[in-house]
Amino acid sequence: INRCEVLMAAWPKARAGNYFKHCSSTFYGHDLPAYQDEMDTLLLNNDMEGFPTTCGGRSDHGARLCPCAYRYPNTKATFHTVFSVESKQYFEWQSRYNVFWHKQVGQPGKITRLLSMGGAWPTNKSPHPVGDHLMKEVPTHVAPKYDPRIDQYTAYNKPLAITHWLQNTKVEEDVIIINDPDCAYVGKIETPVEEGEPIANQGYYTFKDPNSVEMQIAKHYCRGACKHFDPIAVPVIIHRRDLERLAPLWLKYTEDIRKDREGPNQWPIEWNDNRYTTNRIEWVAEMFGYVIAAAHLGLRHEILDLQMVPGVHKEIVPGVPILHFHIGIETPDGRTWMKGNSTAGQISPWPVPPGTDPVTARLLVALHDARTALGNTDRYKQGLWENYRSEWLNPQPARLRLLAAAAPSAAAVADLDALPDAPG
Image 1 (cartoon, rainbow, N blue to C red):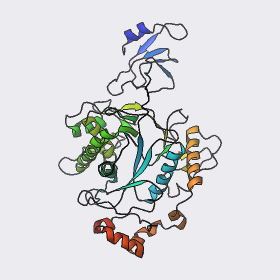
Image 2: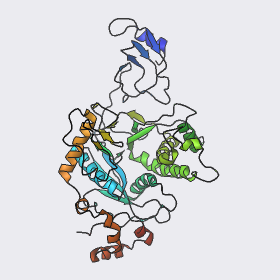
Image 3: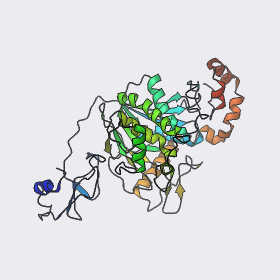
Image 4: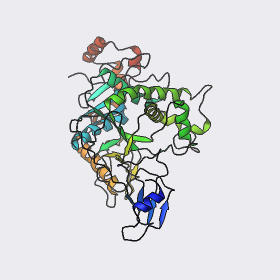
């Protein structure tokens, strides 16, 4: 029905009884075709391949013409949320808050922190034998870190940790929710997915332009094996069996992309220059790795509205479950907050200043709730984070006995970013 003559015949009159005056084919989006009230115009979707119509698409100004079918819930579906981190001060409060928010909203299923610590993948595949000081507080799977002597690109650790978790743990849940540590649950994700039908949020990029840098990268590395590319972002909701196939490919394609940072196949200048793209390949190789791996397997994602970004979105959208605070915010009284600040987990604007937009206000409430409930960690209170390495090199006797039994490699010891607490 995505043709003007069809729509004009099917809906000859607007809501007020007047006949439609216009039909436009210059727009695209997951919520199209639709009727636009202000312009009294029918809007076609001119990019069905890149933006297939889905029930998750929405617009504040348009009325969808095609009703969505009701998705009967799979009441037997089980969920497991994962997020990937390293043992660094930057991730300490995010890890603790993530688990709190998961519990606060009553999100179904388990949550696991995938901690990349120890080892030097692929030469040393043994993760740190003990983990860090949050092991008792935060449900954790410890995976080996990617060897920084090969490449210091830390985003390798996300697909590597997910692969290691799936291959070395008995994961029983059907539905895996992949989140980032800078995502706060403000609602539940209860949408079940079947095998071959993943769901994700719309990314901030597209593959609409066949000559775009994004399309050039995707086609170059998929080498003719892919028919489509989905511009997705977290959260990703995917069946466990799909993720078991996808995660190793995700790592492989990330490695393939990063290998070309130098040498005879070095990236074209345009791929890594903000004058040509906001997606500099140097930084987003892992993102492309996922997109290409999914395309390689023929997985198409249904696009739903699953996140709001404080500082970008101003109004709360009912049913959107995630606040993704990956950029800084500013309140009407001139105060700022950004996750990268060393005090981000301790200090944020409170009480919420008058005039703060609802999305930013909801984030400030979430931060305040978590900080009030959890307090600061002992490491924060004691200011001992910078002492981790020296303590590791001079461990207490109890810790020495434990580590001697585990016999970690010299490389694992040398590469540690954090020191585990002594076992209780």
